[in-house]
Length: 600
Ligand code: ARG
Image (cartoon, rainbow, N blue to C red):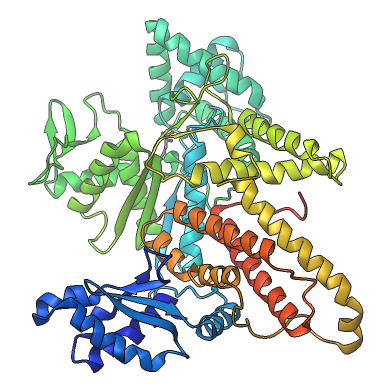
């Protein structure tokens, strides 16, 4: 189905053509002066140069043409100096458009003609380190980006890309070896099976890593031993490999639980380790093709390009001591991904401080032919989440905040608000359940409503408020619609049952009040919003939209007697309109990765 603005642009384009001008001048946009009109076309201004004519004259001619459609498409059209064409839509046309959108599976959003095969690399947690808020944004934004691409009809795979390789593993293994040297994993003469049970719990594991990391900074000798262990492990030592499997398994179990709470779901759980087997052949080929050369003992690929405004250092493949790096792993992961599935696009989510890394990796993979030029590599770098003091968010004691605690804090804040309500009908257990759903919305909306690249302040009080531009406010609006629909269904249950009628089936009716028209206009912008959110991979555009739509619904609700409307036909029309609003809002928040409770 076409977007409303495209339909309107066609109408105006035809009028331009009828006056002897290019149809392309007929492009219609939403008015930036809503006090004057709903839509506008500035084509006469652009055409003035090409046709050497005063813009107001062109606008006047075109307006004259458009007048023929007044009463069907337009309510009002006018030419305004210096050459604007102001447009107000006819209520019948708008209602007919929405009736069509309501019958459309995508609610009026056209999908791209060509379906792509897309992989979204997000989450990026590191094994054996607790999931902290540094990884929160990646999970929240990535999940939404994945859902947006899927909604547009693409085949999309979400890959968690576990950090399960490198020094951090060696640190844990070395620390464990020194604490419990008797474990069979460290016995080179061990020839039996290794135990099925992990020798630690997730709690112990999470204590071991920071201890080992701190020790390696103070104790050079320990640091060297950990390096040696890392090396031994990477050479495929069977005991350490068995131990590594336990570390990954225990960690992944815990991660899955955390992501489940966040309503984040990955299709595949590959890790950096899975890319390692692809490294040797990749490096050999880069050497053989003449792309990789030696520089100060390391093997590098030059990725600087003409016109660079800042220095882009070469991409290092292998260090002088033979170790491979983060970039080597990301390159090999591209090889792995392209071998398994021919992808059209890979989207990466990572902290914006990793921008240089991704520039190097993308350039290197293009230059060396790991991907063809048709494959799009896209990096979405996000800003940090700050505390009210403007510094990266920390716990009260100054440590890195664990995700679990953060979620609990926001749930508690929502719970308190629910319990404060004097008209509350929920008992404590229901309030707890609801607080979990609403808390998730508060957290995600608080994050996603900001442009991803910007830093933002995490403000629990503001995010959990039921009023203003917040997740809970959007949910509150949906719950309000649900409750009206429920009352309506109860009142009509008998009639519907006896007559076998489908309640409120039929078209969207022409708006009869300003607030109803405003709500319909807002609904008609869903396709436009989605197109922009997709092309810019920008969930914040959806947040802004659901907020505006919620405002329009609430304004309409306050000014309209919906259930008490005397005229049955009109009352049912209202029910259909708010039902459509509910669907659009629910679709919107599903794309953001959260959902509404039944009551709140
Ligand atoms: N594990 C990394 C980190 O914690 C993030 C991974 C991002 N994805 C990637 N393909 N490099 O910083």
